[in-house]
Length: 403
Ligand SMILES: Cc1cc2nc3c(=O)[nH]c(=O)nc-3n(C[C@H](O)[C@H](O)[C@H](O)COP(=O)(O)OP(=O)(O)OC[C@H]3O[C@@H](n4cnc5c(N)ncnc54)[C@H](O)[C@@H]3O)c2cc1C
Image (cartoon, rainbow, N blue to C red; front, side):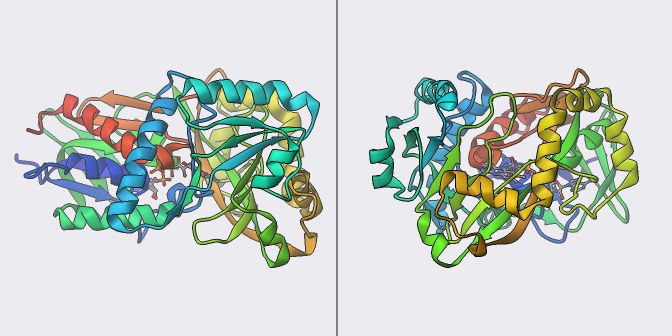
């Protein structure tokens, strides 16, 4: 049989969409379909994040995250310029608020230089005052290449390009089964199915399940961590010029609760990192018993919980307590008026966890028969997305000849 499409991509988040864009770059390109279970693109991680264009400061030199982040910024900024997507490049500061944080700050500076960041500079409180007049520090790092963009806007602009190129974006299309045969792949939804020569799994919070549906046995399981934000309005919003970050705890894969001015000028505090009771658990009251049970019985999850139970419980308490959340924000900018902070939106991170309880520390892409699977695309995957898309497209071309 002749399959309907050359490539079927599952997931209309930023990784699925940019992969489709990379595949269709040259005309005549392959026939591509993006299958997204929600009525619109960017409904999950890609539309519910901090909107920070990361500079590549945090990542292990030589890792895929470090490389694709640096490459991704260049591509992202060029794309935003070409398609009229608003963004800022106002930089950020990482502030050490105690002497104990200085070694971790020094390590960040070292990584930043090793990753080729331009203009990273250690500063004291006087220089900090010139950049962020209301932030406090013992010492800080100024990272001028950081910026802000609405990644939902980027996704919608990429979707527009895809439509111009004749690609199909099928919504809502929830993939329930994937049948791989010698000649093609049948991607089955609840009421219709499509056939393709190769399938690309960019399913974010469900990418491990989709990989198993395609016959792969991935060594990782996705665990979900919610990030909750507070909106900062009133006079307190004027206390944050661009982005103010704490020094992250090197033992945890999160950057710490920060203050960010978004590309539209609004200011937010967050995100925290709390375990969820469902993969798409945007609120405490969203509970999916089957998904919860799967997490709780996964050996890796129990090992992770065993290692980090103290910080986990502290995060859960801070999630419930407005007072504690505001206190964390005021460690960065003490003048913030608690009355100007109100609960805002939330996002859920998909993180790949090994059976031994380690969170996979890099982007993870695996290849199966007639399939390519993006099994870990955590932050800075939105910043890096145009480079990740190009990288995944190369892997797809290794699986089938698309020329
Ligand atoms: C709180 C938070 C803050 C973050 N901050 C930043 C930041 O400031 N900068 C940055 O660079 N990155 C940030 N990130 C990370 C970034 O948002 C993600 O790395 C990126 O969006 C991942 O994109 P994705 O396409 O892999 O996933 P997603 O956007 O989650 O897309 C996956 C898609 O697959 C679809 N799907 C799943 N299952 C199926 C199925 N069975 N059938 C059809 N479709 C399916 C889903 O509906 C979803 O739309 C943040 C993430 C979070 C959660």
